[in-house]
Amino acid sequence: SLNRYPDPYQKELKELVGKMRGVNHEHIFVGVGSDEAIDLLFRVFCEPRRSECLIMPPTYGMYKVCAAANDIQILSAPLEPETFDIDVTKVLKTVTSATRLVFVTSPGNPTSRLVSRDRLLELLLKLPRTTLLIVDEAY
Image (cartoon, rainbow, N blue to C red; front, side):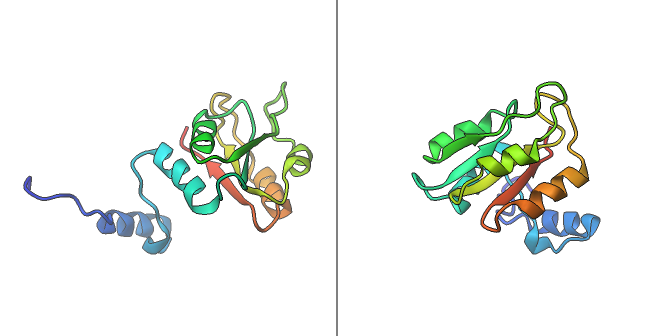
């Protein structure tokens, strides 16, 4: 009915998505758009003035905005200019012990380039255990 607020925990939606994806509904986050989710990643996993994030330009601009809003240093490992592929070696050389988040857009925004599963797995397996690999598939 119109006189009630929606469920703030989105329980029914999470259960439905969980059934569709074969995932426990308690492991599903529902936010008000991708910008909120990105900002919450910084707030939960980073420490202001101490943590870093890594982006791979050209990429989605909100990573920089949210990093700045949360006082997180931004590291950059640009995509290969001709192919827009991830240079895993460059990423791993750029990551430090303070890097908490690594953002990958797939398909890329604004490149439209898909990152292969093999490339993502390679990166995931080589990153430090203290670093989260965020695969942003919103585009």
